[in-house]
Length: 484
Image 1 (tube, helix red, strand yellow):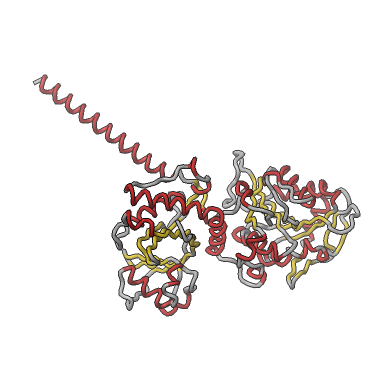
Image 2 (cartoon, helix red, strand yellow; image 1 turned 90 degrees about the horizontal axis):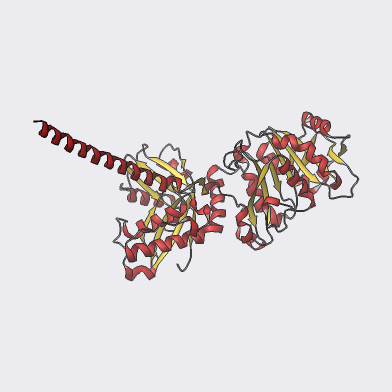
């Protein structure tokens, strides 16, 4: 009996070892899947993209705005999406040249408008120099029918930090000051403590010392109005012109790092529709509209790179029936920021397959590659694409913003709230869900027609309606080219 017991114990130990090995393998595989999807993707999202320093060489003679952000306690940069900037350098000269850049840069401040309590507008004197620092002589500053009240407490603090009495002038006479007043008013209204300074060139060091406490303060924003139309090759050492030397020195003293925002070429101006009037005369940009502007900037720089990834993935899928996963050493690191992407394949102008991700759960490079594979071989509405068709397939890639719930009373009310031509829609009823990209407006230009066909795609009758249906809007940037 003892031999039999020993044999049973031995077999039991073998099975236990096998189970342990299987468990270890399973845990290892789960970890691999998690790390490959999450750790191999950067935590940043392309929806919050701003042009950063390693993109500078893609531009010639740019207009630029620069934000300066703090380092964290560990010495690492605090992400721009996680904190408000401490210093903001913005162009003021030549609105025909710089207005898109200015408007988009100010719009970037909208999420932080309630956290910023103090705003100080600063400019260098472009008139004859007298060796002074000037504060506004009146209780308010006005320009373009917009007014900002001057904070006596803030002005008194600036005076105490100065080594001599600050001179008084009507600062609205300075173009660098008056150009920014309407925009500051539009973003912050009268909720902030506001002050303005104009300084002569030989007073830049003193201005740096006066403003240093505010550069450290998370509730303060220093806005330097400057001509930023020079060419910069090293944003970490931004020296726009003499009138922003103080910014660079101040940022170094306060241990801040720069982010160059939305560089714009002369030749790009005609292609952009973004105007200062959108900030001066209209309501501020919504979160979706801000994300859309970020995605447009991202697509301008990296759209063709994503299309190339999608093309490689498509070829690999159709020819070899294999998936393609982009590797970091072959592509810019920013393509591994998270992003939601849709791939639509066309043949002779008709859809031949599509696949997409609604949420930015992985690197946008991975999303482009995986969805190209799925659109070619796994779309249940079409047969898999064959090798013979490959040369006729055109690729369209759409980058998606986040989602916004549309609240409505009934179907007629919903149709009034849909933004024709720009809204993508997601409708959900129970387990049924359907998605239409904004590009579908080309096919269905009327709201009722658009919604009815989305219902059909979702598996509903066009005549069906229930107020239980959840509807979400999103925006998208479409990227394509004539030849892949």
